[in-house]
Image 1 (cartoon, helix red, strand yellow):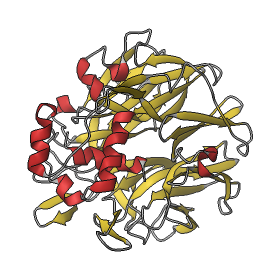
Image 2: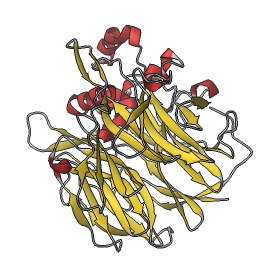
Image 3: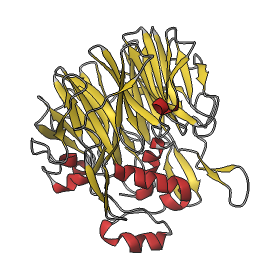
Image 4: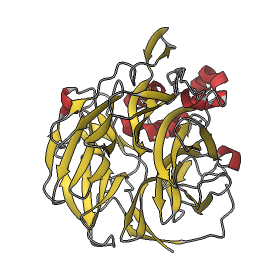
Length: 466
């Protein structure tokens, strides 16, 4: 996989051709240009609450924002929250808790935050500085399970926190769980913790499921953010594991080597005692990243999306070489692949970024990124299935909605809307939030202050018109 493409998509952790189907729908753009702030690069999260639609943004320069609309139409959006400092990189998760409280999970270099509101206007910060551990820099997922609210945390290791009232939080400790998997560090020959983040949480068949991200992802993203330039990295056309050093030298880009890890899936009936169902030495023959099904799945580093649809649990992967896939289970331990983008000829869908059930169909938003000179790079796509079965998914969006591109350099163009980052069902209409080129602050050489690497474009919001 093109290392920059993977790193661009995963960088939010620290701060991730098929012919048109006849089952077409129309799409209408209802907001553009990052709500008037083009440094709002992602519509990072989306949620409904008390009859309104909310969007949280990724903004690495000025800090994350939250926007709200009572109709979802153009010209109706209001800014109801703006981070005071840019170390708040954005609102990675919005979560509606029974329409009583709306939570906003913010990624922050000084430790993740959780904010909440009961009226949609006034926000209270209930978690600061990563639950008193500044290494907990991001919260990507939140869900209610029985009497507790759970938040999945990422940093140096994956952690899980819970709260009965949303105000007072405690860490969930279980010696057999997320920190227990160790993999070799290829640089030092030592063992390191595999799981750096709980990327997704889901409630299915009376149990709480947690899905991890791996150390492999953290190495590459942190290395790039510190040293690398988007323009030279994105021209690093293809990564070949067998020719890693030669290719890197030719391109002027040096990447840290891969670990031997892949994602894991855990479940619990009480939120405290956990069982590994996909991972290293699991009892069900799945292996890390489903590697016991196929060794190539060891390059499944992340679970980027999950959904419960028609009585089955689905997960979507990020794959090292664009061999992104969707898997499902009916009882939690036996998993089957139902969609493989690479086998369809879709070699540039690097993430299954969001999955969302709507009107008895399963919608899948992808990240499709690369130079538009490469055949098959189309920009964001939305796939849909009536059943979730194999060979039933078809594509509704083929060119990032409008086919517009962003010029990164004189010889490089990429799709403007390269990813579908968020979905919401609002007033019986499907709303979609996009991801655009990330503007990354990079320190100027020999000078104070920062320069921006990337292009200011600004995320967009679209709605489906059947």
